[in-house]
Image 1 (cartoon, protein in one colour):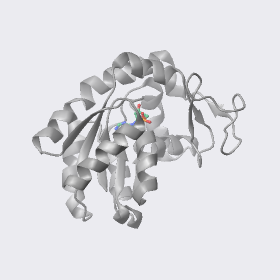
Image 2 (cartoon, rainbow, N blue to C red):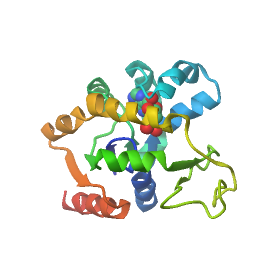
Image 3 (cartoon, rainbow, N blue to C red):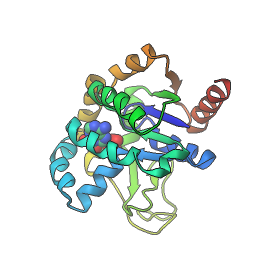
Amino acid sequence: MKLILLGAPGAGKGTVAKILHQIDGSVQISTGDILRGAVRDSTELGKKAEAFMKAGDLVPDDLIMGIMEERLAKPDCEKGFLLDGFPRTIPQAEALDELLPKVGHKLDMAVNLNVPREELLNRLTTRRTCSNPECQAIYNIKSKPPKKEGICDICGSPVIQRDDETEEAISKRLDTYEEKTAPLVDYYKKKGLLLNVTATSSEGVVNTIKERLNQS
Ligand code: AMP
């Protein structure tokens, strides 16, 4: 399947992508994960992106398109891809429209995960992530704590709060989402590619996506 996962930070895009990957091997492509890896490795990209990310601002479109041109041309995308956190602006969506035919792909749909802002704030302030870049398992100190406090159940690495998951940065990220990314919902609706889902549970979202794909 070739999907865009739209939705605010904390809407559950990453979790849904991980479940969908297990169904048919479609690769999860998270620009946030790629950028965090670049910051960690202090690459040129990482140095350019770091300050924007820490402040909860978007990284400039040209840097993001550079990443995506390279990533979508890789052979593993033949199995399908799940775009998680990209596109985030109308110019990125327009650039993606130009890029996809060049790399021989066509989108199945754009899925919008709807979650109220209060719930997003609650989820993000209590979210914790495994610090091991190969693992990145997601926990929640209220609803899904690791079995041993601060330690990943899967790989044993420390479980941490991301730099951009302080209350201030989260609030900024949600405002940025409303201003720059929410207009994409209309963009994909006009193209007839939108599936709007109320994201109460990841399994519910996955079932709705599977039903829609089976219909088409
Ligand atoms: P995420 O993990 O998707 O919430 O992304 C974390 C941060 O990475 C965002 O707050 C942005 O600073 C940056 N980022 C990720 N994806 C994009 C994108 N498509 N365009 C611009 N900035 C991005």
